[in-house]
Length: 233
Length: 303
Image 1: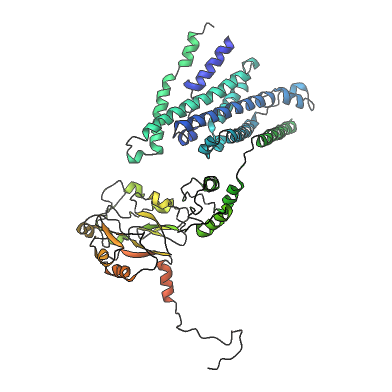
Image 2: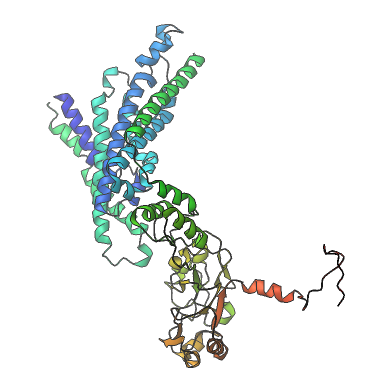
């Protein structure tokens, strides 16, 4: 029960309260670039969600099994060359960035092939933005959040398991989708408005994004509120 | 310990590379998409400038449209006739008449000719200056801050003496300058010959108002329209009917050019005025005499 509750809190926090785009301001590039139509925004959100879940799965697996100090796989291999106590101190966390970028790039490539095969119109409408998910910092951010919750925990039981990580990855993507779809809806209406010339284009989009972020600030503290309300569990 | 850490790091990356390559290789076979071979061939035949002059996002999209949706083969302004021929050969169709599309700047006033100019301290861009009144007297003409110059990826338009001037040797007709100009004085026109007649003014005000803001602007006097039916005066501005325009100018058209008091009917295109200037200095002998010393033919000519 406690575990489910934890997953629930992580999910709602990633999707709404600490929304990646509107709270942490990561992933702004596709947020501005592909938020012209709601249909495209939904597609982009789904693609980012898929890539994020996949990348978080890969990065959690690699971090837990290889990178973190005392990870079973690296300790086992290092055990051939040194004493088991020493092998358990081997720290490969310096590799996190390159490994995560590697896995994100592969995940994007995979999703690109999949979308091209099964959703050609979507593939066409994405254009350059699909490969650009590779450099979408929201995904790297999700991976690094998972890493910070796996590595460096004094008590190994506190480290996130795969379920919590996947919840963060998937609902982080859902949060991104929510943000970009709201943005696209506003921008569709915005096309009909008489925007003063100096504000047209990217300028008004960024202003709208800022106001949207302020609105999402209203969710602040909801997670701690829920935690204290259901604290008895 | 250091060696083991390095070895483990390298090993991790190596294993990741092998595994992910295998997965992606499997996926590329499994999710293989057949691409029309003609589209690939057309892609190779196109210049690859990705300028958007054809109306598609890039060369790839245009190639696909030609191959699959029977789009016209002569849309590429950069490649011109040769490119259209190559694409037509791939598609096995006849190429229609291709005219290169080139921009014409409909303003002919350099700084000295523009009256009522005031000091402008704002952002040095036409789009910004256009929002402010009284930057210069003429509200139609070139502002001279070079938004078109910045938009051009082919280094083919420059602000010379305050006036945007197209370098037709470099221009490919992508139309980026047309979109960049906030005053819409650059039009993309089908060039029926290397040189085209153009009205280099956009001022639609009455003649008196034009004279007060510009030394050279069209005053809508209608002298050209009286001389030739090619011209009509619309909104106090001489306009050329390009559908009726023929590359070999008839005498009445040349007459109209002469009659224009403001000299606004000018030819633009190749060769540029600069080339013509250079050619004027060159001495061209009237008759070329054969030089027996360098000639291969050693027979003497005895008249």
